[in-house]
Length: 126
Image (tube, rainbow, N blue to C red; front, side, top):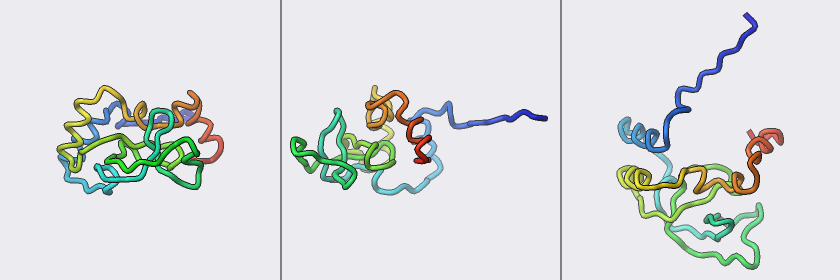
């Protein structure tokens, strides 16, 4: 009584574990997780999608590139990665060879501040 228990069974899974599970279970995913051509611009070492939220600036040219999203979130904080992985097997191969985590590759917030995600929570983003 008076205690709370929180359990996060997936917290120890890696990105590769998740993709292998998706493949094993035959889970369908939106196309955005697979490589496709998209207009993007470079900011902070990441490819971001143009939008009303603040990009691109005048010094950030838009390029058409083949990219995919390793995570899907708000356009203002989620970057794409160069990729030719158009199916599950190719994504799994790409992730297995990568030495950069999903968060390190695509989370603009993490580059702005160590507390950016906590700041978004306080602002009601979640």
